[in-house]
Image 1 (cartoon, rainbow, N blue to C red):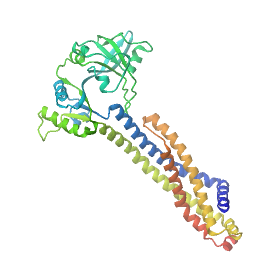
Image 2: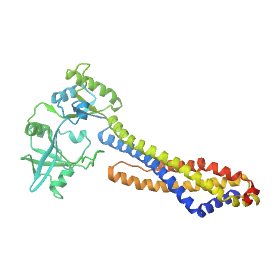
Image 3: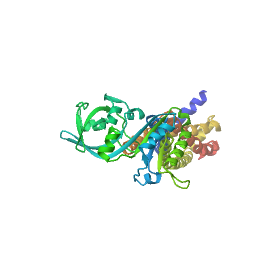
Image 4: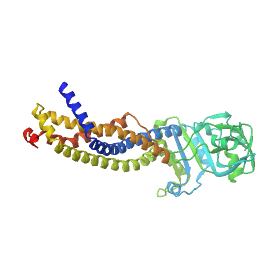
Amino acid sequence: MERFIRIISQSIRAVKAFKLRTLFCLLSVSLGVSSITIIVAATEGAYEKALDIVSVFGPDSLLVFGGSEEIRALGLRQRTIRLDDVEAVRREFSSAYLVVPMTAVREVNVSYKDKRHQTLVIGSTSDYSRVWTWPVIQGSDFTEEDVKGMKNVCLMGIHVMRQLFGDEDPVGKYITVRNMPVQVVGVLSERGTTPGGDILDDRIIMPITTVMRKLQNETKYISAFRIRFEDRENLDLHIEELRSFLRQRHGLQEAESDDFSIVSPKEIIKFLVALTGTLVAFLGVTGLISLIVAGFVLANLFLLSVRERTNEIGIRRAVGANKRDILLQFLGEAVILTTLGGLTGFILAIAGSELLTLIFEFPMKFSWKAFAIGLFLSWMVGIIFGLQPARRAAELNPVEAIRG
């Protein structure tokens, strides 16, 4: 044990003595380790974000939009979902405890006194806050009577409230929605932003009858509906049953594609995983190349160091050090250097992730796993690329080394 401690202390002294070699090795290893660490943090962050979104979306929920996936991918809107479809689904699927229709009107001008704002207006039923698990924190929800009576009432997202009212309590006040007076009955809790950066709280919720008749001049078609099931373990089965049911109602032939889109929690996870995959692929290749380059830099610097230190090695062998001691000393130097590089790389990764989060709002999560993987990779670089120079140093003939 005492011998091993002496070898480690010799390695530390050598690392301190050869400052330029230490600097180059540390920089090359830290860049590679930081890339790999960011990959691990980005992957974990994306999965955690996906689970958070699924939790908000509802693991027992499906969202059905009008229009095929191809049409939606082109940014076009196609009205194919009708109010009677929603009623039919409510009757047909007994395990669905909430089926809530929605229609949307974008870029609607709203105002209060001298303040104006452009926002999204959503028409829905009194179950909107329940189906989205989005509680009302001020005032109260509108009622089914408000829906049946086409009342001019609304729930307000907290972003709209701040734009129009500031610190003033909006409940009971009247705002103007396209020149129509609408009473604010409640304020929804804060939800934040989507992965794409859209503000979820920038919306107003009104009775669907009011929005369809007074804003859209529509009696039949809606934008979407949301459905929640009691038996969420059968969600995949419900998706197929719902697809088949809607295709039959819309009279679609077997060769025709769906004229609607069903979004499930799995689709959200797939989207975020695909988004993360691009970053992982780029940083993965960069990180691996950086680590390999770091390994070659380390190996070459250590081979140069062996040549410069032949005298030292010969003297150490002459006073009793064996081949194993020399091998362990040089490997110890390599591992110490790469450990320092790994720690520096982890710090660089944290700084880099702050930049990614600031510019792209990308979810990052650093954990013991990211740190452990970065440190393990740095050790592997030290051992694999430091082994050949260490062996060469250990194989030197003591007499020839002293003469050299």
